[in-house]
Length: 109
Image 1 (cartoon, rainbow, N blue to C red):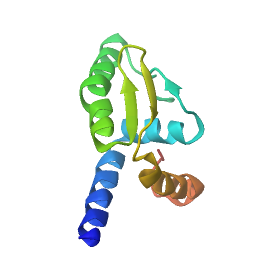
Image 2 (image 1 turned 45 degrees about the vertical axis):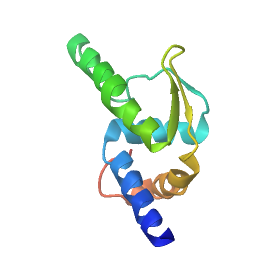
Image 3 (image 1 turned 30 degrees about the vertical axis):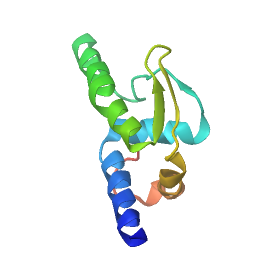
């Protein structure tokens, strides 16, 4: 049964890393805990409507998804995101990607 749990966790990790906004938030948590508020990712140029859409997407999709997986805890009232109880499971994968960012074929995160 342990074997199945390992694969389930790997599926959760890959699902969390499948989106650039989620990757950027998780990478930010490698060095900063707590990560206050959720900011527009660096290098993303958005107008007011795009920013509003990104904020809605973060609050209704990305943050709840990461929280459900246990990778973050999210205080909606204080707008604070911290490492969750399962963050240590995804941390080694994030570190490997960060350490090898120059070798990846696409921009990371």
